[in-house]
Length: 172
Image 1 (cartoon, rainbow, N blue to C red):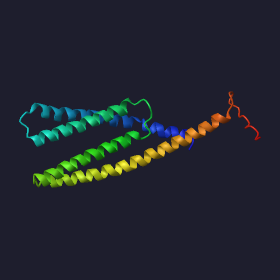
Image 2: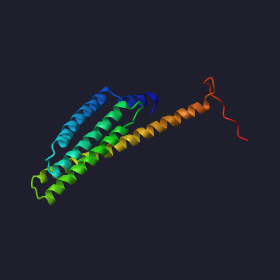
Image 3: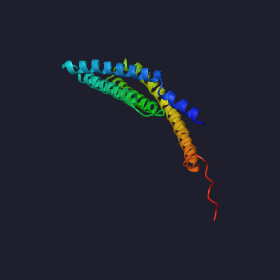
Image 4: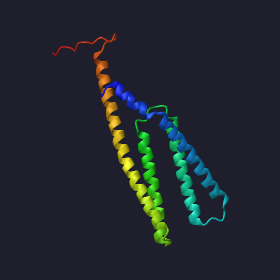
């Protein structure tokens, strides 16, 4: 792997498309959190199960807000780490939603919760696939970065102050 191809990979991580996507995520998650949080806070007569669901959804939205803000304010290359974090959040939130739907279906005996559980199970499966792919890509980028650092360190060790190559010392 040479320097231009590594630079191209790093530039890809900071693309305009990625930034726009994270800005849209920030706006959508902020809006969703504000709406659900407002409903939760201003409706004192909510049933406990609904209040708990609103609290969980508000928390999920705020986590996505924090994630998007973190990615947008990062001043260093994340090397795909943001994808791993996003996939972990997606898997966690899908699992929580699946657990909630299953609890409502089994404990409360509400038949409409079964199709929701199927949807959340599919979302969890997709999130796990995304997590595996993100972790593989992150590992690949880290190995490439380490390889490049090793090559650059090797060049720096053999170059003198003026950039000329020094001979290695003769063995004793």
